[in-house]
Image (cartoon, rainbow, N blue to C red):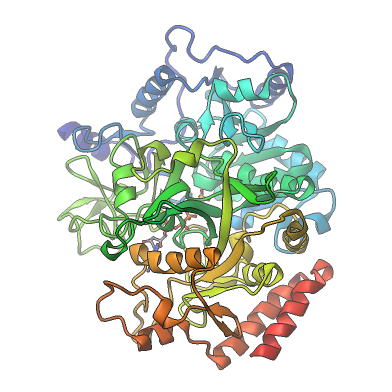
Length: 614
Ligand code: GTP
Ligand code: SPV
Ligand code: MN
């Protein structure tokens, strides 16, 4: 593997992001245009604006992928990792100024400011279009413009949606191929319809001053400039599946949510489907791939999705959910054989690693990896790193992009166009204090209140403020494509449309003791909480009423095999501290105050009920 090391050391430590002019693609590659006239004319217009050297029409084939990977390696955008140890795996470093979502540069461009609401950045569409068009003018000169058609959701599902992303980043193309059903399948789904999302992405010069992620919900259009990283540029993910999706969901009576989807199977073979919303870097991927502890013999958890759920009432009156994605763009640090063996298997092949550390044998490492820190390696910036270095070797928001097909625990339902019927919805934040391990909402409105008032410590997934507690309603603060108050109204109104609504729960894996250590072991042990939730759905266990919701009885909370776990520890995890809750109410008030204008009265009422119970 000396080649890998040689490459990494001689090239610019900031890997190049832009593809240079493409080598001449063999055969028909890159030349297969769709027949849809609306697609063709939109591409033509965008090409006139951006002036690329050439247009590469992606078809999603294996042949195309092999060609583009080779090109990306030749351009220094990707580095080939040790193919014996990590077959099909590649490595990428983004520009150090471009390593996470940028919420301050993310805009919802609706005709009025009220439509975007007080939690979003807003700009008038005409003004923003003009500004962005100015930046896009000639932006792809000397570059290739890739046309990436993709389908969000299983083939043939009424919930699925088509997007087309224009991009000048070969890295984006290769990631989109893992994260979505990319290629001809999207054109087939679209046929000659005009109903597709128009996404335009150009990296420009990666100048943070010229970085804008803009959504035009009324036009089903996204324009992203100045970034090459993650949720800023993989437009199917946060931009389409959540921001535009939530906007469409409101008028079309469905929900687009920042939720994982899993199936719990009991030893008797009964399946329960669960959706859970945790903010960015707060445990969705881990929970979706959970392996039950040994004491739970016969229990099985399978993954449907790890980040996004689209949910709509079905003909039988239950709420059905699909995962619109086909891959995981997951947080690397903290991922290891002990915490998440399924993820480790998933990322053992055909995976793109971004901003992790690079070892001399052409493999990768990050903080919290199973392997001991390497005596020496290259950090995420490409600089020499040793265990004495002060900075982490991997960026805290370093990620893997891996196909869901690799997941040993992938649910057979993951491709089902009908989706799965949801029995429980879980909301959960990262809170060192105040919030109990688990509580069940009294009813739908109370559940919406629990989700709406959620707070969480900020993480490295977004630029700025890590560690501070902020309100993150339903884990959607950065992703709701319209007025948050109207979004709450939508959630409340969905109750009337779902004859058999899921039960709603709230969890917190992150409560800490006086010693600063987590009170709950988390990860696979979260199965204990999940089992209680499943048992509540089937009516198998009782619960105790507290001021914040229904709480498990210690006797009915399964602690078999959790060595030395005492009732005192359980009580500490479930404790409702009045003075902490008084502070919590004030923080909740701040959000309600900000949203006051359109805030539904039901939530104000729920707040009053909570106060009187406390
Ligand atoms: P996004 O992809 O940003 O939406 O994140 P996510 O919600 O999928 O979070 P993920 O599962 O990747 O976990 C993020 C971080 O939280 C990782 O460093 C995990 O190791 C850590 N984590 C996940 N689950 C638990 C848990 O149950 N307990 C504790 N203490 N940490 C956890
Ligand atoms: C998140 O931040 O919630 C993510 C990563 O899942 S990104 O795709 O960058 O949004
Ligand atoms: Mn996410």
